Amino acid sequence: MPGGRGRILVIMLAAVVALAVGEALLSKGMKSTSRTEGGWVSQITAVASSGWVWLGCLLLVVHLGLYMLALRGADLSFALPLTAGSYPIAALLARFYLHEDVGSARWIGTALITVGVAIVAFGEAKAGP
Image 1: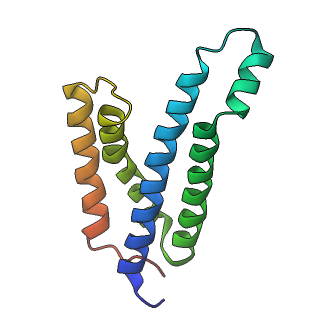
Image 2: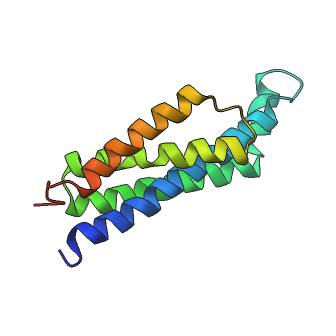
């Protein structure tokens, strides 16, 4: 495969950004629909008409497509842990875009996960067959 590991890392970087941003937009959309009055039909209508929810879902589909592309050329044991790279991006988006309280335990846990992702990304395992 041309590019090998570097190509897979670029694809997975785009995939995890799409995943984290998609989840943040989905969260924003769902929180904005929680203020909707009425029963479940009103809730479904509010969710279905939310641009944030649609954009978040679109980015999650983009993530899935990129992840599938990465799996064509990489071992699952290499690609799957890289999806956890979305955690630090999501934590930053939660804190600074959604204005959520992200406590120190969450930051420490996110840092530990990020170190694990770096070990997988830059370790000795080959990217694919």
